[in-house]
Image (tube, rainbow, N blue to C red):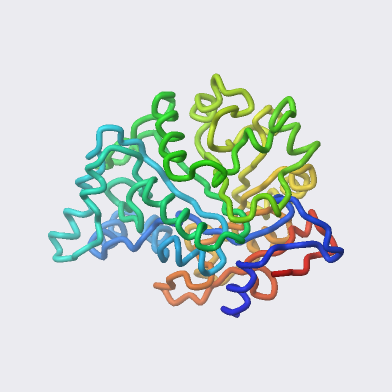
Length: 363
Protein backbone atom coordinates (compact mmCIF):
# COMPACT_ATOMS: atom_id res chain seq x y z
CA UNK A 1 0.00 0.00 0.00
CA UNK A 2 2.88 2.38 0.79
CA UNK A 3 4.18 2.12 -2.78
CA UNK A 4 0.72 2.91 -4.13
CA UNK A 5 0.42 5.97 -1.91
CA UNK A 6 3.82 7.35 -2.86
CA UNK A 7 3.18 6.77 -6.53
CA UNK A 8 -0.22 8.47 -6.52
CA UNK A 9 1.20 11.50 -4.74
CA UNK A 10 3.50 12.10 -7.72
CA UNK A 11 0.96 11.52 -10.47
CA UNK A 12 -1.15 13.94 -12.45
CA UNK A 13 -4.83 13.06 -12.51
CA UNK A 14 -6.81 12.89 -15.71
CA UNK A 15 -10.26 11.54 -16.50
CA UNK A 16 -10.80 8.19 -18.16
CA UNK A 17 -11.12 10.07 -21.46
CA UNK A 18 -7.87 11.96 -20.76
CA UNK A 19 -9.71 15.27 -20.66
CA UNK A 20 -7.76 17.96 -18.74
CA UNK A 21 -9.25 18.51 -15.31
CA UNK A 22 -9.60 21.59 -13.11
CA UNK A 23 -8.05 21.79 -9.66
CA UNK A 24 -11.45 21.32 -8.01
CA UNK A 25 -12.02 17.98 -9.77
CA UNK A 26 -9.72 16.09 -7.41
CA UNK A 27 -10.20 14.60 -3.96
CA UNK A 28 -7.27 14.28 -1.56
CA UNK A 29 -6.58 13.17 2.01
CA UNK A 30 -5.51 15.92 4.38
CA UNK A 31 -4.49 16.22 8.02
CA UNK A 32 -6.05 18.12 10.93
CA UNK A 33 -3.91 20.25 13.27
CA UNK A 34 -1.01 19.08 11.13
CA UNK A 35 1.67 20.78 13.25
CA UNK A 36 0.65 19.16 16.56
CA UNK A 37 3.19 17.05 18.44
CA UNK A 38 2.73 14.91 21.52
CA UNK A 39 1.65 16.62 24.75
CA UNK A 40 4.16 15.97 27.57
CA UNK A 41 3.09 13.17 29.92
CA UNK A 42 2.92 15.43 32.98
CA UNK A 43 0.70 17.91 31.14
CA UNK A 44 -1.56 15.19 29.78
CA UNK A 45 -1.92 13.70 33.27
CA UNK A 46 -3.01 17.10 34.58
CA UNK A 47 -5.52 17.56 31.74
CA UNK A 48 -6.91 14.09 32.36
CA UNK A 49 -7.31 14.83 36.03
CA UNK A 50 -9.30 17.98 35.28
CA UNK A 51 -11.19 16.96 32.12
CA UNK A 52 -10.91 13.31 30.95
CA UNK A 53 -12.97 13.92 27.81
CA UNK A 54 -10.67 16.77 26.74
CA UNK A 55 -7.64 14.55 27.41
CA UNK A 56 -9.05 11.84 25.15
CA UNK A 57 -9.72 14.39 22.42
CA UNK A 58 -6.16 15.72 22.53
CA UNK A 59 -4.46 12.32 22.57
CA UNK A 60 -3.15 12.33 19.00
CA UNK A 61 -0.21 13.95 17.24
CA UNK A 62 1.59 14.08 13.90
CA UNK A 63 4.85 13.45 12.10
CA UNK A 64 6.60 16.53 10.62
CA UNK A 65 4.89 18.24 7.69
CA UNK A 66 7.35 17.00 5.07
CA UNK A 67 6.77 13.40 6.15
CA UNK A 68 3.03 13.90 5.86
CA UNK A 69 3.51 15.20 2.34
CA UNK A 70 5.73 12.20 1.57
CA UNK A 71 2.81 9.99 2.67
CA UNK A 72 0.48 11.67 0.16
CA UNK A 73 -1.25 14.21 2.41
CA UNK A 74 -2.27 17.20 0.29
CA UNK A 75 -4.18 19.37 2.76
CA UNK A 76 -2.43 20.79 5.81
CA UNK A 77 -3.93 22.73 8.73
CA UNK A 78 -2.03 25.33 10.76
CA UNK A 79 -3.35 27.17 13.84
CA UNK A 80 -1.86 30.65 14.13
CA UNK A 81 -1.59 33.21 16.93
CA UNK A 82 -0.51 36.81 16.41
CA UNK A 83 2.59 37.82 18.33
CA UNK A 84 3.86 41.09 16.81
CA UNK A 85 6.20 41.90 19.69
CA UNK A 86 7.41 38.35 20.29
CA UNK A 87 7.44 36.44 23.56
CA UNK A 88 3.69 36.20 24.16
CA UNK A 89 3.85 32.39 24.08
CA UNK A 90 7.48 31.93 25.12
CA UNK A 91 6.82 30.64 28.66
CA UNK A 92 3.90 28.20 28.51
CA UNK A 93 2.68 26.86 31.81
CA UNK A 94 2.68 23.34 30.42
CA UNK A 95 6.39 23.54 29.72
CA UNK A 96 7.08 24.53 33.32
CA UNK A 97 5.02 21.55 34.47
CA UNK A 98 6.86 19.17 32.13
CA UNK A 99 10.29 20.40 33.23
CA UNK A 100 9.33 20.12 36.91
CA UNK A 101 8.50 16.46 36.20
CA UNK A 102 11.90 15.96 34.58
CA UNK A 103 10.62 15.79 30.99
CA UNK A 104 12.68 17.20 28.15
CA UNK A 105 10.66 18.58 25.25
CA UNK A 106 11.44 20.08 21.86
CA UNK A 107 9.92 23.43 22.83
CA UNK A 108 11.60 26.15 20.73
CA UNK A 109 11.70 29.13 23.07
CA UNK A 110 14.04 31.12 20.84
CA UNK A 111 11.52 30.99 17.99
CA UNK A 112 8.74 31.98 20.38
CA UNK A 113 10.66 35.05 21.53
CA UNK A 114 10.90 36.43 17.98
CA UNK A 115 8.11 38.63 16.57
CA UNK A 116 5.67 37.02 14.18
CA UNK A 117 2.80 34.57 13.97
CA UNK A 118 3.19 31.43 16.08
CA UNK A 119 1.79 27.97 15.39
CA UNK A 120 0.31 25.95 18.24
CA UNK A 121 -3.00 24.38 19.24
CA UNK A 122 -3.92 25.60 22.75
CA UNK A 123 -1.69 28.11 24.56
CA UNK A 124 -0.06 26.74 27.73
CA UNK A 125 -1.65 23.30 27.30
CA UNK A 126 -1.19 21.87 23.78
CA UNK A 127 1.70 24.19 22.98
CA UNK A 128 4.25 21.98 21.19
CA UNK A 129 4.53 22.18 17.42
CA UNK A 130 6.77 20.55 14.84
CA UNK A 131 7.26 24.06 13.43
CA UNK A 132 6.85 26.87 15.95
CA UNK A 133 6.30 29.78 13.55
CA UNK A 134 4.11 30.32 10.52
CA UNK A 135 7.12 31.24 8.42
CA UNK A 136 8.86 28.06 9.54
CA UNK A 137 5.87 25.84 8.72
CA UNK A 138 5.32 27.46 5.32
CA UNK A 139 9.03 27.20 4.61
CA UNK A 140 8.98 23.45 5.25
CA UNK A 141 6.01 23.00 2.93
CA UNK A 142 7.61 25.21 0.28
CA UNK A 143 10.89 23.28 0.35
CA UNK A 144 9.06 19.99 -0.06
CA UNK A 145 6.96 21.46 -2.87
CA UNK A 146 9.99 22.73 -4.79
CA UNK A 147 11.60 19.31 -4.49
CA UNK A 148 8.44 17.66 -5.93
CA UNK A 149 7.35 20.12 -8.65
CA UNK A 150 4.64 17.90 -10.18
CA UNK A 151 2.64 17.37 -7.00
CA UNK A 152 -1.08 17.98 -6.81
CA UNK A 153 -1.87 21.44 -5.38
CA UNK A 154 -1.46 21.60 -1.61
CA UNK A 155 -4.29 23.23 0.32
CA UNK A 156 -3.28 24.90 3.56
CA UNK A 157 -6.02 25.79 6.04
CA UNK A 158 -4.95 28.57 8.41
CA UNK A 159 -7.11 28.56 11.51
CA UNK A 160 -7.05 31.33 14.09
CA UNK A 161 -8.89 31.10 17.39
CA UNK A 162 -8.40 34.71 18.43
CA UNK A 163 -10.72 35.06 21.45
CA UNK A 164 -9.97 34.22 25.11
CA UNK A 165 -10.71 30.60 25.98
CA UNK A 166 -12.27 31.48 29.32
CA UNK A 167 -10.14 28.84 31.01
CA UNK A 168 -7.99 30.01 33.92
CA UNK A 169 -4.25 30.11 33.28
CA UNK A 170 -4.52 30.11 29.47
CA UNK A 171 -2.78 33.00 27.70
CA UNK A 172 -5.35 35.06 25.78
CA UNK A 173 -4.68 35.57 22.05
CA UNK A 174 -4.70 38.92 20.33
CA UNK A 175 -7.93 39.55 18.40
CA UNK A 176 -7.40 39.52 14.64
CA UNK A 177 -9.99 42.14 13.78
CA UNK A 178 -7.04 44.58 13.69
CA UNK A 179 -6.36 44.92 9.96
CA UNK A 180 -2.70 45.70 10.60
CA UNK A 181 -2.31 42.18 11.99
CA UNK A 182 -4.11 40.74 8.96
CA UNK A 183 -1.81 42.69 6.66
CA UNK A 184 1.15 41.33 8.62
CA UNK A 185 -0.20 37.82 8.17
CA UNK A 186 -0.38 38.32 4.41
CA UNK A 187 3.17 39.69 4.46
CA UNK A 188 4.50 36.61 6.25
CA UNK A 189 2.82 34.38 3.69
CA UNK A 190 4.24 36.36 0.77
CA UNK A 191 7.70 36.32 2.33
CA UNK A 192 7.74 32.52 2.05
CA UNK A 193 5.44 31.72 -0.88
CA UNK A 194 6.48 34.32 -3.40
CA UNK A 195 5.53 34.86 -7.02
CA UNK A 196 3.62 32.04 -8.66
CA UNK A 197 4.13 29.64 -5.75
CA UNK A 198 0.74 30.73 -4.42
CA UNK A 199 -2.63 30.32 -6.13
CA UNK A 200 -4.36 33.56 -5.13
CA UNK A 201 -7.95 34.82 -5.21
CA UNK A 202 -6.89 37.35 -7.88
CA UNK A 203 -5.71 34.54 -10.17
CA UNK A 204 -8.88 32.52 -9.74
CA UNK A 205 -11.20 35.53 -10.09
CA UNK A 206 -9.53 36.85 -13.22
CA UNK A 207 -11.85 39.25 -15.04
CA UNK A 208 -15.02 37.93 -13.40
CA UNK A 209 -17.09 40.42 -11.37
CA UNK A 210 -16.67 38.41 -8.16
CA UNK A 211 -14.78 35.39 -6.89
CA UNK A 212 -18.07 33.58 -6.32
CA UNK A 213 -19.11 34.03 -9.95
CA UNK A 214 -15.68 33.03 -11.21
CA UNK A 215 -15.66 29.58 -9.61
CA UNK A 216 -19.28 28.87 -10.52
CA UNK A 217 -19.20 30.09 -14.11
CA UNK A 218 -15.67 29.92 -15.51
CA UNK A 219 -14.32 27.49 -12.92
CA UNK A 220 -11.01 26.98 -11.14
CA UNK A 221 -7.67 26.87 -12.98
CA UNK A 222 -6.74 23.76 -14.90
CA UNK A 223 -4.93 21.12 -12.88
CA UNK A 224 -2.00 21.33 -15.27
CA UNK A 225 -1.58 25.03 -14.37
CA UNK A 226 -1.46 24.49 -10.61
CA UNK A 227 0.69 21.40 -10.17
CA UNK A 228 3.53 22.12 -7.78
CA UNK A 229 1.69 25.05 -6.21
CA UNK A 230 -0.12 25.95 -2.98
CA UNK A 231 -3.36 27.70 -1.99
CA UNK A 232 -4.55 28.84 1.44
CA UNK A 233 -7.94 29.01 3.15
CA UNK A 234 -8.40 31.37 6.10
CA UNK A 235 -10.66 29.66 8.67
CA UNK A 236 -11.70 32.29 11.23
CA UNK A 237 -14.79 33.74 12.92
CA UNK A 238 -17.04 36.01 10.88
CA UNK A 239 -15.73 39.28 12.34
CA UNK A 240 -12.18 38.42 11.28
CA UNK A 241 -13.32 37.25 7.84
CA UNK A 242 -15.10 40.58 7.40
CA UNK A 243 -12.02 42.51 8.47
CA UNK A 244 -9.89 40.50 6.02
CA UNK A 245 -12.06 41.45 3.04
CA UNK A 246 -12.62 45.09 4.09
CA UNK A 247 -11.15 47.21 1.30
CA UNK A 248 -10.42 44.03 -0.67
CA UNK A 249 -13.63 43.16 -2.57
CA UNK A 250 -13.60 39.52 -3.67
CA UNK A 251 -10.31 39.37 -1.72
CA UNK A 252 -8.48 41.50 -4.28
CA UNK A 253 -4.82 41.71 -3.32
CA UNK A 254 -5.15 39.16 -0.51
CA UNK A 255 -3.10 35.97 -0.28
CA UNK A 256 -5.82 33.70 1.11
CA UNK A 257 -9.27 32.53 0.23
CA UNK A 258 -11.85 32.87 3.00
CA UNK A 259 -14.76 30.97 4.50
CA UNK A 260 -17.82 33.10 3.71
CA UNK A 261 -21.57 32.50 3.52
CA UNK A 262 -22.62 30.93 0.24
CA UNK A 263 -24.27 34.09 -1.12
CA UNK A 264 -21.26 36.39 -0.55
CA UNK A 265 -19.00 37.63 -3.40
CA UNK A 266 -15.96 36.04 -1.71
CA UNK A 267 -17.53 32.56 -1.35
CA UNK A 268 -15.37 30.02 -3.19
CA UNK A 269 -14.35 27.48 -0.53
CA UNK A 270 -16.51 25.99 2.22
CA UNK A 271 -15.77 24.03 5.40
CA UNK A 272 -18.20 21.34 6.54
CA UNK A 273 -17.43 19.66 9.86
CA UNK A 274 -19.77 16.67 9.58
CA UNK A 275 -20.37 15.00 6.19
CA UNK A 276 -22.98 12.71 7.75
CA UNK A 277 -25.17 15.69 8.56
CA UNK A 278 -24.35 17.85 5.55
CA UNK A 279 -23.50 15.40 2.77
CA UNK A 280 -26.19 16.74 0.44
CA UNK A 281 -24.98 20.29 0.93
CA UNK A 282 -21.41 19.24 0.16
CA UNK A 283 -22.52 17.51 -3.05
CA UNK A 284 -24.45 20.60 -4.14
CA UNK A 285 -21.51 22.90 -3.52
CA UNK A 286 -19.04 20.62 -5.25
CA UNK A 287 -21.32 20.34 -8.28
CA UNK A 288 -21.56 24.15 -8.41
CA UNK A 289 -17.77 24.51 -8.53
CA UNK A 290 -17.07 25.22 -4.86
CA UNK A 291 -14.11 23.55 -3.12
CA UNK A 292 -15.11 21.86 0.16
CA UNK A 293 -13.01 20.66 3.06
CA UNK A 294 -14.59 18.20 5.48
CA UNK A 295 -13.51 15.73 8.18
CA UNK A 296 -13.52 11.95 8.59
CA UNK A 297 -12.94 11.90 12.35
CA UNK A 298 -12.62 14.26 15.31
CA UNK A 299 -11.34 14.19 18.88
CA UNK A 300 -10.22 10.54 18.51
CA UNK A 301 -13.89 9.43 18.75
CA UNK A 302 -14.09 7.51 15.46
CA UNK A 303 -10.60 6.14 15.89
CA UNK A 304 -11.36 4.64 19.30
CA UNK A 305 -14.31 2.67 17.90
CA UNK A 306 -12.76 2.12 14.44
CA UNK A 307 -15.83 3.76 12.93
CA UNK A 308 -15.39 4.63 9.25
CA UNK A 309 -18.97 5.82 8.74
CA UNK A 310 -18.04 9.48 8.64
CA UNK A 311 -15.00 8.74 6.46
CA UNK A 312 -17.12 6.91 3.90
CA UNK A 313 -19.64 9.77 3.88
CA UNK A 314 -16.87 12.32 3.38
CA UNK A 315 -15.45 10.42 0.42
CA UNK A 316 -18.84 9.81 -1.21
CA UNK A 317 -19.74 13.51 -0.88
CA UNK A 318 -17.05 14.46 -3.38
CA UNK A 319 -15.49 17.01 -1.01
CA UNK A 320 -12.07 17.88 -2.37
CA UNK A 321 -10.21 17.79 0.97
CA UNK A 322 -10.88 14.92 3.39
CA UNK A 323 -9.16 15.76 6.69
CA UNK A 324 -8.11 13.17 9.28
CA UNK A 325 -5.79 12.70 12.24
CA UNK A 326 -4.98 9.19 10.99
CA UNK A 327 -3.39 9.21 7.51
CA UNK A 328 -0.90 6.40 6.68
CA UNK A 329 2.21 6.83 8.79
CA UNK A 330 0.51 8.98 11.43
CA UNK A 331 1.50 8.11 15.01
CA UNK A 332 -0.78 5.57 16.69
CA UNK A 333 -0.07 6.11 20.40
CA UNK A 334 -3.20 4.26 21.51
CA UNK A 335 -2.60 1.35 19.09
CA UNK A 336 -5.99 1.93 17.54
CA UNK A 337 -5.19 0.64 14.07
CA UNK A 338 -7.40 3.32 12.53
CA UNK A 339 -6.05 4.59 9.17
CA UNK A 340 -7.90 6.74 6.64
CA UNK A 341 -7.22 6.57 2.90
CA UNK A 342 -9.41 6.86 -0.16
CA UNK A 343 -10.69 3.60 -1.72
CA UNK A 344 -8.01 1.08 -2.72
CA UNK A 345 -5.56 2.71 -0.33
CA UNK A 346 -4.83 5.77 -2.47
CA UNK A 347 -4.45 9.33 -1.22
CA UNK A 348 -5.81 11.16 -4.30
CA UNK A 349 -8.41 10.54 -6.96
CA UNK A 350 -11.02 12.44 -8.95
CA UNK A 351 -13.94 13.75 -6.92
CA UNK A 352 -16.80 11.30 -7.51
CA UNK A 353 -19.17 14.27 -7.62
CA UNK A 354 -17.16 15.99 -10.34
CA UNK A 355 -15.86 13.15 -12.54
CA UNK A 356 -18.32 10.27 -12.45
CA UNK A 357 -16.21 8.16 -14.84
CA UNK A 358 -13.30 8.23 -12.44
CA UNK A 359 -9.65 8.90 -13.22
CA UNK A 360 -6.70 7.13 -14.62
CA UNK A 361 -3.20 8.22 -13.68
CA UNK A 362 -0.37 9.20 -15.99
CA UNK A 363 3.21 10.14 -15.00
